[in-house]
Image (cartoon, rainbow, N blue to C red):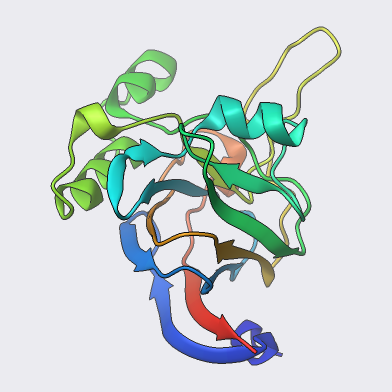
Length: 208
């Protein structure tokens, strides 16, 4: 069964996001944004901004504190820096989505892998933010859908292999008008994409 056939509502947008590229769209309050990991094991780096006030953007630390968990999962609310509700996770077939690993960049690729010229999520984010009049100073710590970053009892962490399966999806209900910004992660030097970046699907729908 195709993922979009499971949507309970009127589809207003349905698009394949190619491997390694950025994507963005304004999601209206009440609409649901679905991401589908078409082939499995693909990290989707994500940021979001209040469409009416770009300075009121996703707050990683406050989202973790208010929800009381390191992972994004069913029922999690994504909060802004003003503690406004931005999105609520209303469906999730994966179960673990990362809040602490951040995004790859030329600098981190240089430092960890000696590959500063590799395509990276920070560059994708900045290209999308420019469309809305934003830039490097508007970048904040992002979250990563379908990406698993385990944390050991002693605090050790690393970019763990993804646990998402082909067709896994996550639904985010917009609690305000929100600019959603994506980098379909191009990382090939660690296992977050199973060393093989692949496309994902973005569906926006109005629920019944």
